[in-house]
Structures are given as structure tokens and as C-alpha cells.
Image (cartoon, helix red, strand yellow):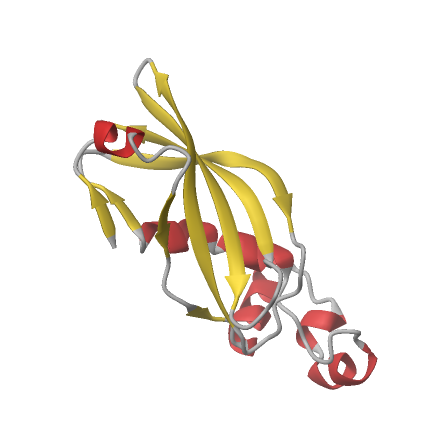
Length: 151
């Protein structure tokens, strides 16, 4: 985990990769639970036999939105802003899923601080997030994550 005592300590890192998360396993159970939570039971995610025989991916894959939903946890486990009393998810920009996440694989996030914008009561941080799948040649998710931090 990378810790920052102040917002000013982070300003020097704008434009740089700040941290890389640990790997997270994408098990079929997690995919099934996500399908239940979102009512998205498309066969490419939950029907193992059909996915193995009919899918161009050779087996089941995770939902793109499951990968996206992991960003908060990956960030929280990787970066700590010590002086912030609250950090909230403000939104996302430019989200893409360039490659699938095969069930059983591991993913991690690479976090680059794109910008810091001062607000009347805090600051907005834009993070370029690249989620990679272990052994894959292309990222599985690329997004700009907007967080608001308050002192």
C-alpha cells in the first residue's frame, strides 16, 4: 500500500504511475454472484459447458461491469490518503473493455494520477486506470476514475 500524508505530496506525481495493485482472482463463484446481483445471466458468463463449446473465448468470461466494479476495492487496497476524512467515487470517463477476463484468471490495476483539481471543499483527482489480466497482451479495462477527497 502506498500512503500519502497530504494532497500536496500527491501533486508532484501528476502524470506518473503511482501504484500497482495486488492480483485479484476472478473465480466462477464471483462471476455467478455478480450475475445474480445484476440479473445479467448471459450464457458467456454462467453456462460453463456452452461457453466452452460455443464462445469464441473458449470458456466463460467475467462481465465487463464486474471488472469495472472492482476498481474501488483495488484502489482502496493500493492507495491511502492519510489526511482525507472521506473519499468518494465521483464517476468514470472513457471506459473501455479491450479484452475479456477469462474465469479463473487474475487481474490487477495500474494507477496513474492524471490530474488534481482543487474544489471549494476538497479536491477532485482523476486517475487513469489500466486493469490487466495476468498473461494477457491487452488490458481488460481502461478507464478514467474520478474521486473526490475531503480533508
